[in-house]
Image (cartoon, rainbow, N blue to C red):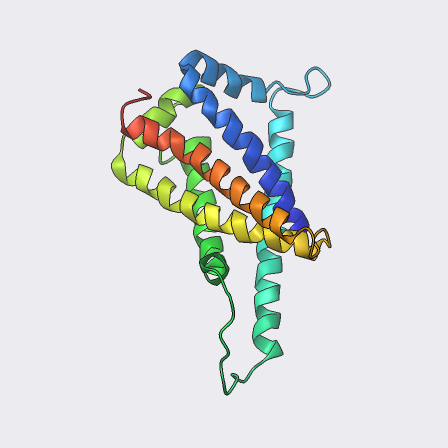
Length: 208
């Protein structure tokens, strides 16, 4: 679960940075989208890299979800009876909402693919015009709201997930705890703000 989480986190950082190209206008953004399909040429055919990336990400997502279900199952069966007395422990909001946030993000991935990858639910949905598709998308207020809710869930997921992954992979210790928590906070905020800046810019007319 930790390994697949790290792989998907690296993808999110690159994906977020690429999305910010929209602020440079349709020529730059559409050119960037086209460039993604030419990576690896001539060794790879057109769009092969993109499909390899998609297969890897889907495999990571499936493994991540399966691991989460298995861990939840073990957690429940490890203590079938409730404790007679509950002692307070310092659980964060991100910790308590991790599973629910994961469900929201899984549903969002399906929506995102249908919306901006396939174009099936996109108001414009024209292949080869990603800039125009994004602008048409976020001009619809409830679509923008879906993305805002999903990105807030992503923020909490990254914050807790990065910290948990560091523990699982044995990277943290008492001396590094503060540093890892700081990195987790910065990563979560930067990625969330980066992704949210696009729908907000469209909804406010900054990008049109």
